[in-house]
Image 1 (cartoon, one colour):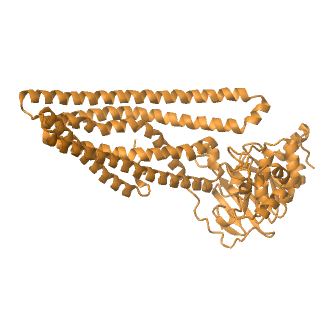
Image 2: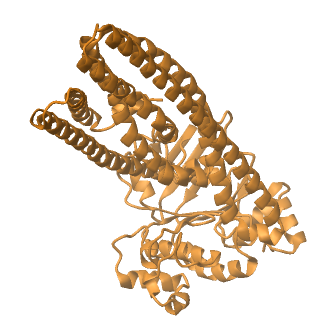
Image 3: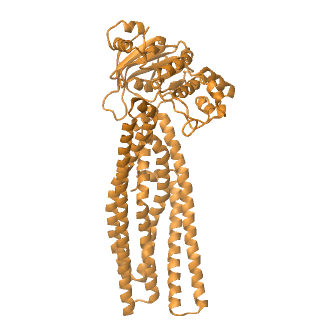
Length: 580
């Protein structure tokens, strides 16, 4: 129920102290309210005058208003704290995702990551708002009330004290079952999010292949599984509420029976008996509130566990070793020597014994079967993955990894599907250069072949794109990514991970004309299945099953037997690409 990391959050001790004081004050108002109400009822029963009754009714009204004021104050305090903390946690998560790079998103799934960053943080905010207050109410109020009940009537206090552990036991048993069910439900929600996002992103491809209806059925089955998990959680929630209400009602009834017998026998005055009877429901109210909101906090706890599973992942250290690196130059050199890379959680190396040297403004193509390790090498070059063994050197300086601040400030990364933020075209283009002037952004868009399209838009550069914005094609999205690279032309290292893989040949041909000038005066690593790009490459690395099986100039490799020659031959037979 309680994640121990909750008590390590910033400001938790200060907020806990304020809540403690307010909860004690709340218990005091409950006691005054109950006592004044009981006294008022006794005075009415005894037919006392209005002058004797009104002061006690005034005390009751003041105590009730004070209790509501305390509740309001606690709520405002918790809402402010939970909102501030959730905003800080979201910033930490986004910062961590930026540090860990695309490999983490690839492992967790885009839908899972987006769900955690948006709805997961919202659930944590709700968790913080509820759990801190409910815990302190449960830990303080019943016991302060019980002390006063023991003073008034020992047998009633003993009755409440004996039944309380039984109620807690049933709540714990049902809580464990609910927690397990809620864990399955949250996992089902993550699966549903991943399937939904994947379906949206791949819908054009699924339509072309005639698989959209088949995949729609797959999404239906996943959503149906999620519905069943949700109903299972609701069954447990309803059962726990019934059990709790049953035992609470039974306990109060037992107390009422004993008090009634004592009143008949004349062993207890009417005022203490009535006060105890009024306090008995208040004694169980915190545990009822806790149980009612228990299921609402489970998703928050699961989301917090998922959040910290990301936040606690190790990040590269020693990121400022490349002190003498002012940017990639014509005489710069990058060396990989027996480098092996392994994804977190993997049992085998995803790249093994990779060795090559890149010199100056060299254009290097990466080819090989899907899943062979091209993207892994790109991520290693970008500093998003760190080698498990081997040596990396930049200008003869040995480095443990390429997650160096100076290196990454010289890198431009173009993935298969560039991410477009929900903002204007101008701000999307200025991703690497947030302070770029309008003239520079326009020049970059001109170089990327975007201006004809932008001029046709009513809002021009101020057109909002991304999620919920102006719909754009895959080719336009890639041109925006190219405009980012043109604008950040001082970054001389280009990492291209199959940037045209999801484009048709006609769009790719038009885009290629735009891209070629960008490759000049840059160190380029270009992972691709479209082998016509190799005509523009100076050097080729052939990767298969995580191993560098061949490397050399394209013309030389084409004349040698091996995987590269086979790929060229298959390409020519398909009539799609011709290697010159």
